[in-house]
Length: 315
Length: 126
Image 1 (cartoon, rainbow over the protein chains, first blue to last red):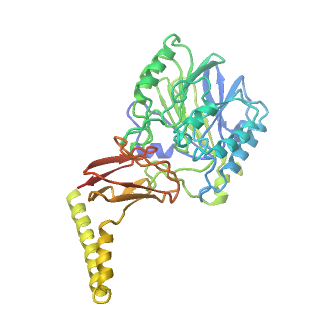
Image 2 (cartoon, rainbow over the protein chains, first blue to last red; image 1 turned 135 degrees about the vertical axis):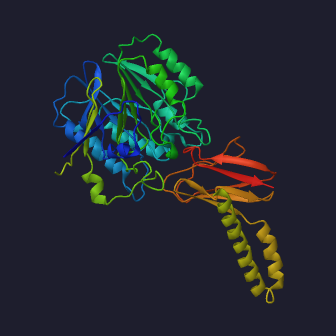
Image 3 (tube, chains in turn cyan, green; image 1 turned 180 degrees about the vertical axis):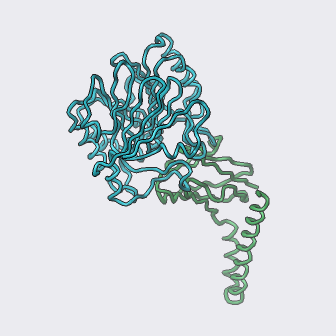
């Protein structure tokens, strides 16, 4: 067991620190809410043993159903394993947030398979699309038909639960050459209006596929106009930003904002700059599952640093 | 540094021409008629751009009007090919899928991957 922590006090984060604080595994992250402030209580492996207090929800991401390459020939199988862990939880989470890339190629059969397995959780799932979910011939129609009910534009929406305001954003549509993820003027205007009547003390959870803050520009890991969204959120006392896309954990605290990216249930991706490209990272088959549930994340309240705990399920 | 790279590219292109010349010279006396046919075919040949490691190669390509350019994806992640002004736009290319576009008029065409827009390339048609 190794415990690492880091603080970011506006001086920026060196690449070395980012790499040190990035670890990857599988399944999902369980979030608990105490005193209105979300904090993660670890990966599912840890959550099974944890004493859940009050309201909990899960974040799952990057299922890539349909992916069958060497990095994981059976992405549906590993999703089944993750869902089995959800089903085995003593206290059911209130809902699951899925931060995109449900499928690999937006094929109807891939969506069908994902829906079937996720349906076994018996828990409501709030989705946002990843870029892999909108590559059907009609560029996103298949996604919106399945998951877009009650959403605006390309699939963005908000809802309230247990006094928390949840906002699902879409930053994978209408991307510009040479750029990063994109929210667009229409969505930003909607976000501003959505937040207008919310008091500063309302806890906010924002989720989207691509990280809203720039993690690694060279690989497109960030959102071009993400800073505009974050500026709208700045006045709130507690903001938690949940993303996927990079298939590894990355956490950061900036003032009242906590940033977190989730693991994939399909395949890992390399740490920024550690490989020629961000493509699927090939690891020995036995290592893939040994790493499931490897890391837990505790986000303390206030200005305390994040703590990342690495732990093997086998050990 | 860019100048050096361009020189290397130029040298590589010349090498390719020289090599085909050598082949042509060797075959010439035997199949003169076929050589003539081959020369015509070479002018219409399809230029191939490969996608490996989230990179278009070559990144810049200059072709003659009427040339067909074919993009082939070798990554195990899908990519698309989208021209900035959407002169052309491929569907999602899975592993080993390809997309071809024939450039009927001169101009500069900047394109990118619609899924990973940090991937960019340029076709100059003269």
